[in-house]
Length: 86
Image (cartoon, rainbow, N blue to C red; front, top):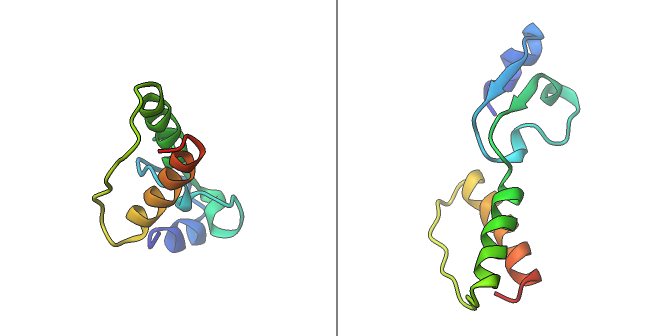
């Protein structure tokens, strides 16, 4: 996120390997210069919870970091887990 300021100022495209969509979404302002290669948290959570649901997993624990990435991952995972009754 800190790199967005100099990237936007110099109008230089930045390719990032981060999984969180918060670096590139919404695509406006400084974020129009940011592109990501990795899948989003949402895509990973969708696949993981679908697999868990197909294998009758009903309970899961979350161990993560108390930062933006951990919060983003927990929000996306929680959304899909609720959808699949995990």
